[in-house]
Image (cartoon, rainbow, N blue to C red; front, side):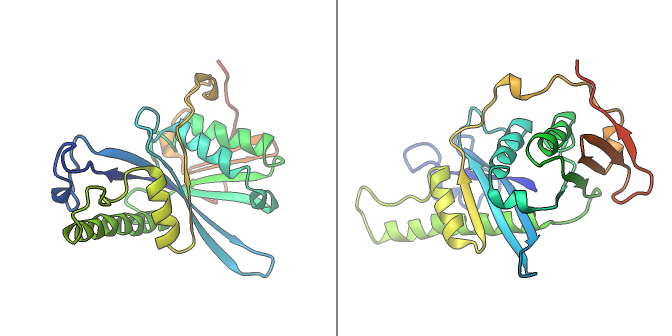
Amino acid sequence: MDFSAIYLFPNIGEGNNRNNNINNPNPPSNSNVVQDCIVVLEYINNNGERIRQYCDFICDHHKTNKNDYYFVYQVWQHIMNIPLIHTFDEILIWSDGGPHHFKTRYCQWMWHHMSTCYFKQKRITHNFFAAYHGHSLADAHAAKGKQAIKYEYIHSQQTRMNNSARNSYWGPTSSLDIKMILDKKIESTSAIALPSIDRDAELKPRIAGLPNIKQYHSFTYEGNHCCLRELTNSDSPQFFHFQYL
């Protein structure tokens, strides 16, 4: 699981020239940012086959689409409504140590809440990659998605060169356009366009911080119990509980 940012550039006449921005690593200030929370689902089906499915949760609502706890919470609310998820014996999650969205007291409370209330108290474990771990499956998928979107912009340029119609295609302009590209161009991908991210303050619990949270790399929630480990599969788990304020 990881976040990626996709930039949608304005048409010519709406700010900077889009033609000059497609290959620019520094997007213009008037570009629209689409946040993409990538969840790579990998599981064994009833035939013993390993299945891998890429899920892109994308949102272009610039007032609410910050990559933080609220975004992650909405993504996993959606995932927990997928019937397939409830056939799993446990959920193992791997991510980087994003201090604003993953390795936070709120995200860890969320796993405890979902295990208890949505997953029949079955085990949910959140593991964190070590620093400088290299590229993950989510990173590789994000690169493919951005390449497909870049191709759409380049293709639209070529189309306009041969067509002077005023309603020429200028490339993707919204998260719905991005969804269509990802679904069509990237194998084993399902994209979900979120119209906005719910930022109701009641969704964030009033809990105290977890002491020394940065030094731990594995958190497990099962049967209404919580434990953490310095390393994944450590023989010395430490049980803890969330302190509500």
